[in-house]
Image (cartoon, rainbow, N blue to C red; front, side, top):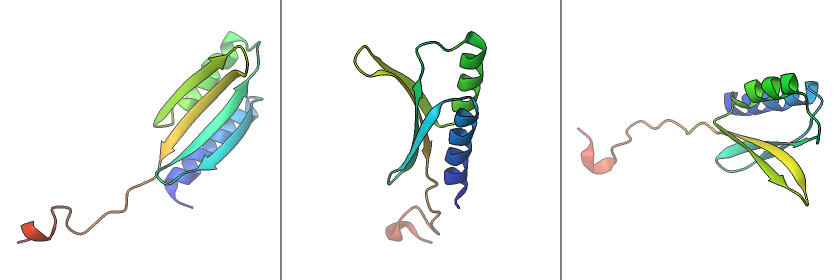
Length: 92
């Protein structure tokens, strides 16, 4: 498993351990983790949740009176290394 996927799975597992229900989705350039946030979440739990999602490359919170609160985090997939990123016209 690539390091980026392992990192995303670890974030999801930590959020689950804090009592949140998570969803993990793999996309072409990143893996996303979403978790429904209950209406009542103690301040200490918020601190722990924020420490976990801070491990991601990006994170945020979507809040709506219709759909509730969804916490999201995204972990970028590693870009494959190439031998020469300058292109064929710039090789020595």
